[in-house]
Image 1 (tube, helix red, strand yellow):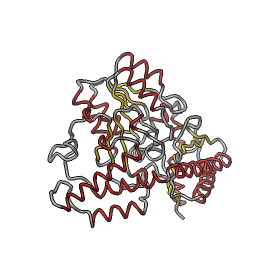
Image 2: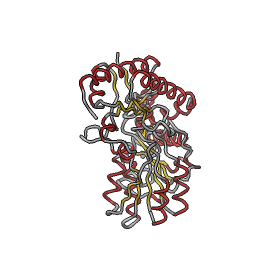
Image 3: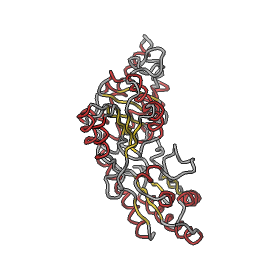
Length: 379
């Protein structure tokens, strides 16, 4: 039996998503820029897809630019701002994804501030306020951590940035579909969205903005998407993205409650069965599906490998970072020691998991940790 608990890396597409993609590739294969009827239908379908995605996000569809995923959306946002600002003063949280950290570091000309985290994983708002007083042009704080699930006080951060005239960007790839975003009323200027974290296709995402004047083209060509991202649009990907958003919107409360139930069920069993196990960020608001647990005295990589052999798929950190031989910067920024960071494993659920998945995985974790503790001598 296989149990997939790595849904923050990617999720299994829903059946209705597969149907939407297949239909767009068969009946709706026209080019949206073509002037004939087939092209017109593709253009209308694309507009409908954008409307569905923006609807779940609670934002104006006119501010949505479809991209190849969250990484491109992050890069489009930063490259646009960097073109408009000379050597901008930038602040990002210590928990950011590499697709935020690297563009910010490369283009800020040494004027990058990394905002510290509190022990619970929340950004230090006092440190942010101090930096805003000194002067910042751009602030980027992810809506929720894909590692710990900790949800940031986004509206408060937006209020602080707005008061000081700083542009605020948030990477909401992990939060989208798990937290109500309400973008139009959020006060945020730029938001990154992704499809494959919520049962949509790989290779499709979006950047939303309340002010399209902030954006400038990163890809030049035929002028598609109001000239902001040239290239023939990925109509099948957009159709799948929209189908995933429509499905989540129709049962949002039930889906969030279900994932919360699975996460809490899993954590109760693990914490009771495994001595010296602790949930990272437990005192903060967390994503409904995410559990980051550290197991004293074991190597998290060994836990992941042994669970994999038992058919339980999970991870230590984000999939984009899991190959590097160093502890999680997010966990270190929360004040964990290197040993504690290495001893951490992330489990992430979806609505496609069953109660049995949570129970089976929890008991497997207990067995693996007990076995490893007999052979490992770690601080």
